[in-house]
Length: 449
Image (cartoon, rainbow, N blue to C red; front, side):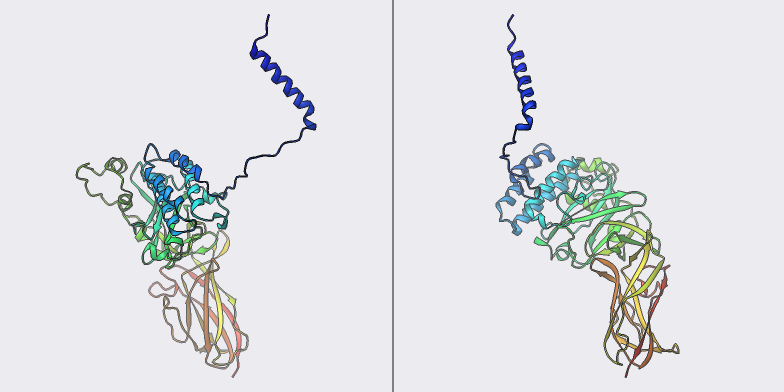
């Protein structure tokens, strides 16, 4: 009986495998002809499939057109960045229109960003660091946020992270808006005057929300208001940003009290999507009804100049003042001297800088009698005769520093006292907050004639 051809092939394969196993120690692997894959390099040939993998049907047509325009523009040019931002905007718009494949969207966003920027300069490393996983930000129904803002993006609306943004009534969790001026003015120092601003909820208890930008650590020229909208704003509450410190307090009303319907209209969603999202609003396909404002919600806000990491709300009840730079020990009367004070509070047991505190220096001689200091007080703080005051801000991305330049008007021994008070009616202490206790600091010096 003849052996079937399939069996012969199988026996031959087994024999070859046995031969390879016996001779394995004598075999030398040949050179690989495949080019090494650089995870940070633009890969144009993959972008069409990434777009098709995220956008259903032909809904990715606008993204593909913008992608082609991006690749046709010169590397590093504003035209290339502007076209790339159009794709990113389309990615975010879809995420607020329907539940999306977050992994596919994240892969597409990473691919586009690698063709927009030299990501080898990004810190932390792109795309391996977890901060560049955009899937949570594209989960709009769970409070994710993925928006482009800046010159030519066509909106001045706040950026919102709102639970139920797709399938229910939006409940604003957190948001970002320029502290003053327009998005374009705030992002004037960013390439093409634009940025991708994205975020997502990290934990519920305590409530922590993470905001980030592309390019990383984008600077906001006039500051950005970051709000945590939990329906509560006690007088001691302030927003802290991990790795930076406690942010200067600001009212969260521009974000938390905003109607999310404004953000919805920005996306251009159709009546069917709106009806599914806001069931209590009657939508007529021919004559759409005005969207009803959602219930107003309170929260706590803070001013950030750049995003470093996660945001959460903390009670600030005790603020400790410390001299971080002291004047020369024996200045001459009338001589200009400098000093620096840091304001800190305990956050999770760690001394953490506090921005937005009006800290004053006052002088007293050996008998305790006041000695006049001559200097300029920051305009955000109350002017107190014979004292000098400054408003604490970040230094090298660390919060809580106040700097002084002043002269002493009398000779002799002098106690230089750093002080603040809890006065809700005047800009002394934590501006806009009350209920804080302050621990002062003293530096002794001698003033020569």
